[in-house]
Image 1 (tube, rainbow, N blue to C red):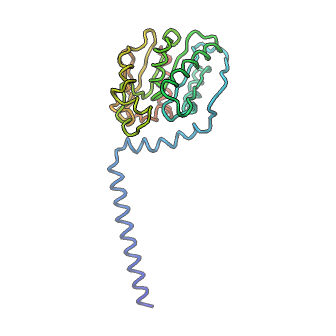
Image 2 (cartoon, rainbow, N blue to C red):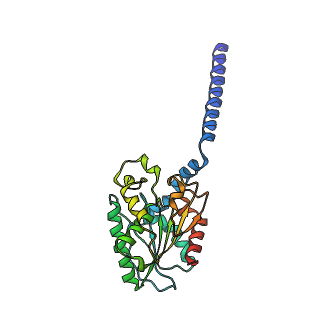
Image 3 (tube, one colour):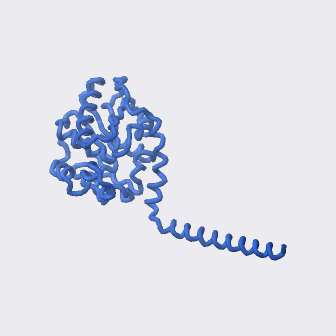
Length: 257
């Protein structure tokens, strides 16, 4: 019996020592991870609210609120629900006519561009508004610029605000090999086409960018000449959607117009 107890004590002691070593290793390795990486990872689950929003909505004309209708454009892998919280916040500021487009899975950038052009047309037709304002996240900013240029919509868009959009391409797109990620790599055909085009004349532009955005590399790729460039470090790529400070900044950008 004494021998058995002795063996059990040794096993218990070894287990504790192993736990301490493993735990210390985990903590040590965790501390070696860039804080911005950790924040990006932690922010992803917070976007789960987007999953409970229907993919499509009827365009309700709504009552005029003294502002142009506001259109939200989501980014790659997102959906119209991404802007749910921001749209609620801006509604409190008087922006009661807002519309969120949804791009179907599998659509190319050109497909999205055509869909957005139709959506802008439909919103203007339903509301009777001559102009709209656009807030776009990530890839949505590129799609909005292309739609304005390709379909000559500059006189129908008063303001375009982009949030972490890789206007000059992003090196993080090298970690995936899809049609869309190839198009948003630096020096791709799409990026070169955008860089040849100056910011749409007559469209007030505001481009938000952050040094902590790990999906837009280099971060300055999200800033464009001819726009008001707003640095919002330490925002992550997802802070634009979930952080109240982002909603407030977008609200100020719209009002400053």
